[in-house]
Amino acid sequence: MSKSDEEGEGMTMGIADEEWVCSVCRSDESDENNPLIICDGCNACVHRDCYGNPLLVKIPDDEWLCDKCTAGCKGESCALCPSTKGAMKRTTDWKWAHLSCSMWIPEVYYRQPDGRDPIDYLQIPAYRWGNTCFYCKSTHGACMQCSHEGCKMMFHITCAMEHGVFLEYKTNNKGADLIHALCEEHAKRWIGKAKKK
Image 1 (cartoon, rainbow, N blue to C red):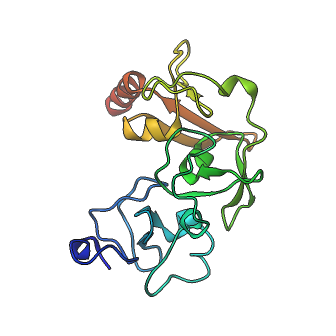
Image 2 (tube, rainbow, N blue to C red; image 1 turned 60 degrees about the vertical axis):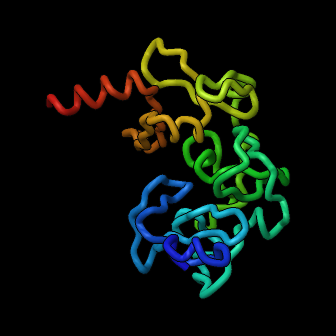
């Protein structure tokens, strides 16, 4: 069922229209091979490819529940941020973590990358834990720091996505993955410089 059908009896799983955005990548673009799919339990909206299994195996014809709703853990918060909303998967220590948090924190990886599960966050260094997020003021979870030299702003990935933080994924010349996160102020400066080139 599309978003336009939501006003009826209640939301059931369906292919979303352009008013919805993926809670993992924050894009509203989709096509028949990678549609936006809505969880019937919590309304988390995800791309098939962003969510991984079981959506990679089969796109459901009717009702679909995300892993968290299937497990009956709807109110559980993410191990990496305080948010209880959005698409999550099990971690290797049987907690829950957002797919978006797991994508953007460099030390986090998937044990089965194609299926995007389980999420292993046990290599996150101590300096990321217990910091106060600039946006939500919570110390729960692991924060990223603005990549601009000298900037001390710390934030959760989900908070960053809601407030216009610039996130960029790069591979350096040695093949290692690099993630850059720029706070709002430094993102504006960087975008301004990029436009002038």
